[in-house]
Length: 254
Image (tube, rainbow, N blue to C red; front, side):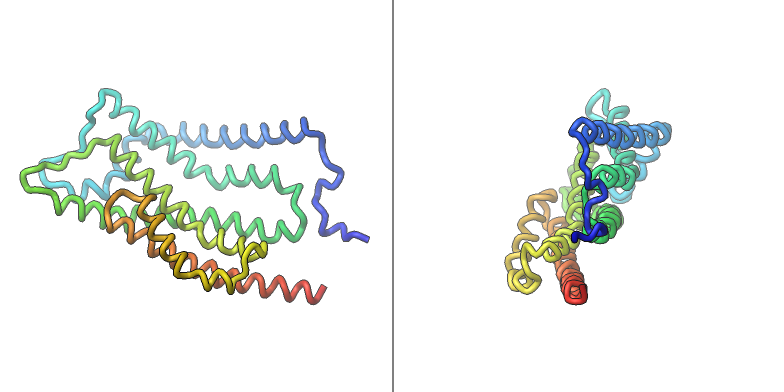
């Protein structure tokens, strides 16, 4: 007899229309959450931009400032950044809505690993963006502002700066998800921890290649992304070994 505890919650199934309606409901809730946060932050759009621009402004030469080369940039750039901030803040709720949709189709054992993985992925994404802002940005901008010719005044366009920092935010946020991906590969037995460990040299090379493509064309930001990616892979490999050992022990005791 099949153990009911291991079956999906929705074992009777639902018509396709009901699934689509539930998906629409989850997406609307997520959209409303982003909209409400955006409306709450919009009056502080300029302050948010000043906060994000501070790592660069700290190293700009005296009597210089950031500039807007497009007529609409002083409005559109803080607007876009505020929208990005709203999505960033609402991310846990967005993922919760995704969980509400897919959760009933998962088995009990799958839920036990999915929930911790989801919470960990959110924490790691936030950690990656914080690492970019507090560690990477100061080093990169100090390097950029110190190597330019003395005859050239650095006055960065605000929209170009926004594109630059959002690219780095996403690059480091996604890169910090490497432990989750590593653990899931090992736990799902797609590849064993031992074989993955043997491929370490290729993983290190891949981290540096990925760092080259995901960051601006400067050595500092590439190194600051590639080295943490490698260390995070090692962390995922370590915890993946622990989880697969626990999984085997539970299977033997079942």
